[in-house]
Amino acid sequence: MKKLLLFFLISSTMFAQIEKTEPPFWYAGMHNPELQVMFYGKNIAQLQVSVSNSIKITNVKRTENPNYLFVTINTKNIKATDFVFTFKNNNSVAFTQNYSLKKRRENSAQRKSYDASDLMYLIMPDRFSNGKKNNDSNDLTHEKFNRNLPGGRHGGDIEGIINHLDYLQELGVTTIWNTPLCEDNEEKYSYHTYAQSDVYKIDPRYGTNEDYARLASELHKRKMKLVMDYVTNHWGAAHWMMKDLPTHDWIHQFENFTQTNHKRTTINDINASKIDTKICMDGWFAPTMPDLNQSNPLMLNYLIQNAIWWIEYADLDGFRVDTYNYSDPEGIAKWTKAITNEYPNFNIVGEVWMQNQAQIAYWQKDSKIAAIQNYNSHLPSVMDFTLLGALGSVFNEDDGSWDKGMVKIYDNFANDFLYPNINNMLIFAENHDTQRINHVYNNDIRKYKMAMAVLATVRGIPQIYYGSEIGMSGNKDNGDADIRQDFPGGWEGDAINAFIKEGRTPGQNEYFDFTSKLFNWRKNQSAVHFGKMTHYIPENNVYVYFRYNSSENVMVLINNSNETKVINTTRFAENIGNHKSGKDAITEQNIDVTKEITLEPKSVLILELK
Image 1 (tube, rainbow, N blue to C red):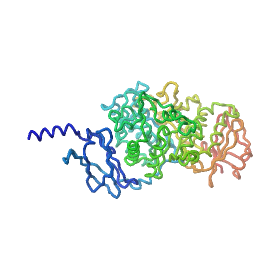
Image 2 (cartoon, rainbow, N blue to C red):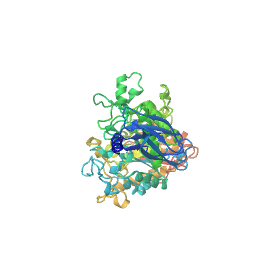
Image 3 (spheres, rainbow, N blue to C red):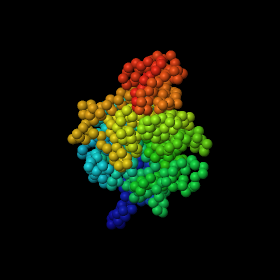
Image 4 (spheres, rainbow, N blue to C red):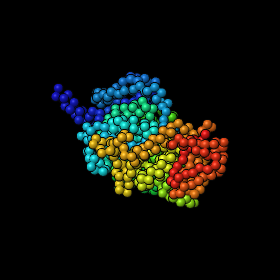
């Protein structure tokens, strides 16, 4: 009896119970039937594993770390069911682990995603609205609530977003993109949540996994969409795996800390040195952000399955992928292709922050530029950073010239031939990493209106940044917290509640009313969504272009000068055709287009030709 007890005590110290099972469950009927389940527990790799319900194990992978076991099963033709993994030591059962294949939603694989008919609204959840005070701090996370600290946790959460869906719908928003919501357990600056510590768990200061799924459900009731901000390039230094890595090459490691050089041109530069290219892709984004190694098949599969798990679990409508082209090019292409294989209509936009159209176009799916190097990222959408650059300066340039003023916008679209799919590009005038547009233009609402009018009427998927629609400003030179200020009215006791008309100042209402009118008008303009574009070389800092299809024709005129301009319309006869008048999208007045159109200084006119 004593020997038996001693054996039990030794066994219990050698083999701890499972601490982590990821994915925590899966779904039946997936396009790829192979499922890699990661088990984590003390010395678990020394055990033998089997599974019930006639499910086949096709591979068992052990690494140099005995605390991990990667078990691949084949789920083909297996219906939704519960089953059991059994772990044995010398034919004695050490422990078991229950597992589930859940039923997918109807038509899950064919889910519709966001496209050029949508308006995307970017939210930093910590700074939008505090819906629940009881989750402002959490015992399991280091950083606590401190609204007085500009770069601290301010308490915004998922409930706060749900509480203000009426506001977003009134604004004309159809799609929400939140910066990451998974747990970030860094000791400071954790509010941005890009240094994630658990990618299967919503940060408890934002809410629960169930709250996130409820957000998607509430949006879908309104025929709105939810986009997850996914990070493939790095995790946070506080991620639970960093204390006990599955493999040495799970992340990129150097003898001394090595930060990326950010020169992503090295990836396709035929003249680039190997060391520059390596540091670009393998260097860490920041000391608190270990660089993930997507060329490790176990790591890559982990990222693929995590992304798919969130799509199924939360019923997501799309991804925005952070720092897309910092990742291993082959690995990130496989990740993207695996997701679009499961969901053929699923849109993924990658952050490819480059200042050259050819370099951005390289990363869009089926790029002819990338094909020269036999590469295809399979990435459906890219972010138009060159348009961002133009929109961030052009309306302060009062006098048009060869390379100043509205010609910057014109020249951006002159390079559209480089892109495989110009309609599926994310267009924006600002985001959480850039200067606030209202700071750039010193809260001159005329310039704000011109910038928003461009976003609403050119090709691509328009994205706006929370708060700018009420005139919120912020100077990035003062630190990131200044461009990520709290939305007024999102916290109990706020002096101004900008979520309701009665709570906004007259100036805030002027911003909101214009934005709402513009983007609600856009909802029904198929020519603007997917039509063709013809534009005319700017003259005297006035830019004119048309969006049209077989049934609709929209004329846009932008006067970026400080003088009233009278525009002779005969130059635009090929697009005006037999139309006699146009209905102003904002005022709804009819304007004669047969001879001359008068434009006020720093103004825009959007006409539905009749």
